[in-house]
Length: 369
Image (cartoon, rainbow, N blue to C red; front, side, top):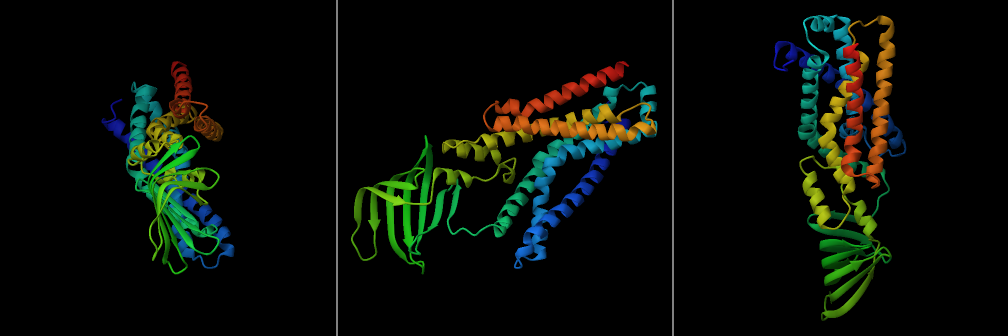
């Protein structure tokens, strides 16, 4: 069936409106549970206002919704199929010569368009909100005076020393070599409690290891009122480690679909592993097809020429259980890919391909029967 035909547009419209209804209801339920959890966490933090919690709850919504998005589209499809079967519209379409595949083409087309809109338009908004949520969530965590920031502008770190002074470390280039980090164009500035510069050190290169030791090469030390001191090697004890720098990487969920390729390229040039970000990017590319496979699962359980009242609940519950199994399987395979046991492509596409193949096989049997 041509999606642009009158019947095709009708089916697409039915699915889209049902999807929007299920989406709004899901957002409302998620927001209620998020607020309950935030209120519980803020019970012993009186300085946190209610409106601050509301902002946090709204910022967290897109990230939570992204996890259940396939279920939302599957439930919307099951409701659409059930209503069409109940009103005998499906029987009339079949009697008019429309096959099950002709019936599903407009539905799958609408689902694919929803998936494309999700990754190209909704995902950038979700990423920005999730990034805001991460910043707001810092107020619930223990305040740490030692902060680290690593971006395409370089490395910046602020540490508290035992004597109460502050040490600021800045490097324009960071490269990973085995278990150590190589830094280029390094600056180390020590400030007193009044933010006055006590000592400044400049070095062409430095090595940072996991033992909290930063060894500077060809260093020059500047102290106000004294002549410049030069050292071939100079060692600083620091809280900074390669592992801690990796922890400062932005979560893939907080990066827009359009910015992920550039972020992956930047981390790769620095020598860091980008498997987590690459998997997330590939999963976004595969998400429209995953949604289409969930439509096929919904068709297996909810698309019937004769919908008997007694079997409706059984079919819906069975479809939801199968949907959860598909999601559970996809998360297990994704974890294998995240740990390097499976290639990234296989970890992302295997659940979609298996689900689609099994659903198509069952639908072919139903069509022949």
